[in-house]
Amino acid sequence: MPVDLDNPEPLSWKNATGDADTMLQNLQANILKGHIRDHLHILLLQFGDGPEVPAEARGFLARLAQLVKSAKTQLEELEEHRRSRTQGTPYVGVGLTKAGYDRLGLSDRAPSNEAFQRGMRAESTRDKLGDPEIAQWETWYQDEIHAVVLVGDEGPVPADTRLQEIEALLSGSIRVVGRERGRALHDADGRGIEHFGYVDGRSQPVFLSEELDQERRLTDGVSVWDPTQPLGRVLVADPAALNSTTDFGSYFVLRKLEQNVRAFREAEEELANALKLVNSDRERAGAMLVGRFKDGTPLALQGGAGAHSPVMNDFTYASDGVADKCPFQAHIRKTNPRGSGHFESPEGERRHLMARRGQTYGERVNGDLPEGGVGLLFMAFNSDLNDQFEFTQANWANNDGFPDHGDEPAPGLDQVIGQGERPPAAWPRVWGEPEGQEAPAARQAVTMKGGEYFFMPSLPFLRGL
Ligand code: HEM
Image 1 (tube, rainbow, N blue to C red):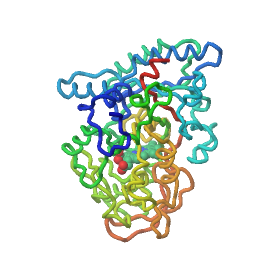
Image 2: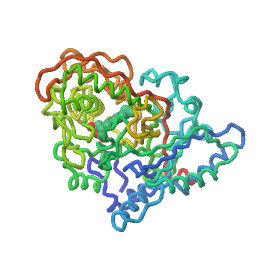
Image 3: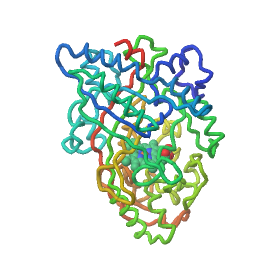
Image 4: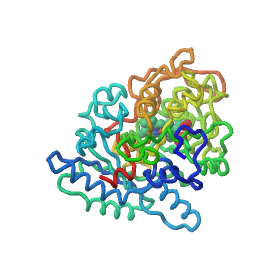
């Protein structure tokens, strides 16, 4: 049976047979389900342009393929870890840019997505996304990049050791032009957080039935918000592979997003002051920028932090149509309106969601409020970069008129990632009461420092190079 990318029923990896099972063996890890990567190395590679390069680069990728983890291995290792606490192996993933396919002499077999072909450095991309001039990017993103290698593990030692093995495979014409080092941050309860201090990575598309089952059994459930997405929202047939029924890949977005922690903290304070919030209600200011309290409690559900653990995700904005609980401009409401966007059908709206696999970077000293040098390595898997990542950033986050709810003022930009002029917005002064007040938007505290679009190809393609 061919793999049905449109099937709304999630795939059971444990019961997968035939093409579906082969697909899981041939697909890279971390796409269908996030791989543990508390310690993450990212290598950005450039292939030379001499006549020997296509053969050398192909040889390198074919050797690297032996270390690249499959989706099937990831899922089996995780299951084994649950049973016996056996540690899994490090994650290794690899992606190629359009220019990378060209250097391999494979231009005609490169994936066809328009945004992928254009790349993140293109002027048209930067115009569309509101990104800064390339001259302001981290130097290694300013020039053409051909490939990315991700190496991640729970511990630093296995990640470092695997990185060294990979570096030993590099040859003269393949150069490391940039490196990133991701390090997970955790709150006092061990939950993953980002640098502004908020729990991150909770709301994700679910592609596997075993994952859905866990959501049902171990969290607040799936009765209101259905997190499932068909495989076709993350997988595409690998155009360079031989077997289009079993060999799949995914488009990978990498963006280095620097966070000015001090500016964000000041924005939280300024909003709390403007709305005259007092005592513990002042925490609501930050929650109105993000859409969740620091501990992950959704603002749509509660006016204060402290919802039960694990972090809740079974909610929509149905009972908050006028946004007197969670503002329209809150980050998570902008980037997933959960049916309240009124711009297209709830089903159409869901199509823009993507599998986020971000990782924090940068060192922190206890209690400091850095203005730079720390942030989020935003990573996400897409089957359509235009319709998922780019749509989210351009049509929702940067669009002050979304969602169009007929009232003045317009909702304003996404208060975390919106790029562009930020007009004042309406904010609920009292949680759940229709007593809105206009106040300045939060100053932009996230700066894009470079990135690129990659395609993470199937393992048979890599092995056969
Ligand atoms: C430094 C930059 C960013 C920070 C600090 C940040 C922070 C957060 C936090 C704290 C959450 C809540 C946790 C969760 O629901 O999983 C979240 C969710 C989310 N973020 Fe971001 N994020 C950033 C960049 C981005 C970008 C660039 C995008 C896409 C263009 C994005 C899309 C999303 C989406 C889709 C969700 C889930 C919303 C939901 O389903 O309710 N984020 N982010």
